[in-house]
Length: 161
Image (cartoon, rainbow, N blue to C red; front, top):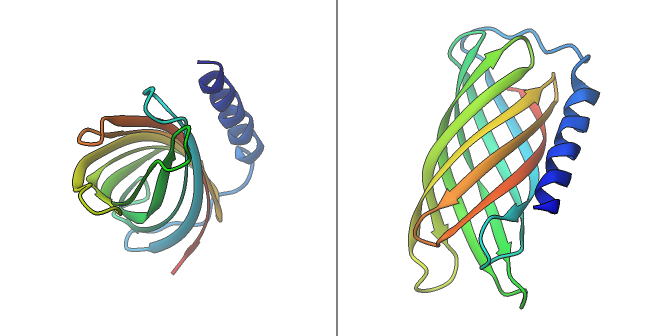
């Protein structure tokens, strides 16, 4: 639980750094591409922490709403550093309140990278702040087949296509 409190404090601190930056002029029909790094802590005893890289394509439906498609690679580490690796494939809906803050909900699949792992349903609600190029978010992810869940922070760089 101490790690969870540290992650929350770090997230709030980072959000406050970016709160005053101006957001890019958005319009309906814009596409954005972002590349991110994420790290988190497991909410089960099976794993200790996670690290991952991802790419997200975003389509702005309106000034306040967007569709998102995300994929990449995530690895959940255990005490033996073998862990569990998977490729997430998610689609989601992002809704902005104000100019920079947003909520995001994603669903999809976590495709195991080891033989016999299979695929798990994946759902991930989150909150974040996005500026013209920087996106920082805090999210919960659950992988029901893998009996795992995590809270993670994503730091990303994005740009308009």
